[in-house]
Image (cartoon, rainbow, N blue to C red):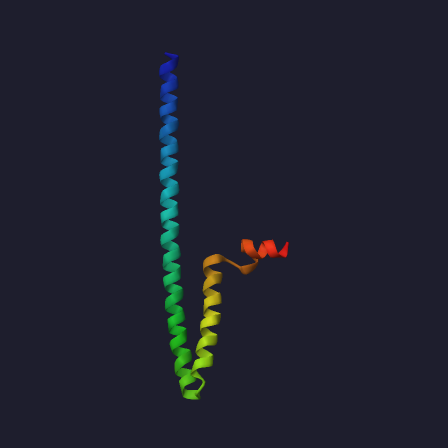
Length: 97
């Protein structure tokens, strides 16, 4: 009798852990898809911004410098969106102390 209860408890525990693993995998998958959507949106915004800056720069004759500066600023913004603030990066935290 006691073995039957013990086996049932082990089975319930196994099912619970399996369910938790499935939830974790679903969360990981959802987070990956969300990160991909964010990256796509950032890329689209950067392309839009670069087009605007290129057109303005073309009228003023300063296309190249403005476009590269825009890409550098946009790239930094994209990294901030994907990786969080620079002061929270593990490498920077190690350098700071």
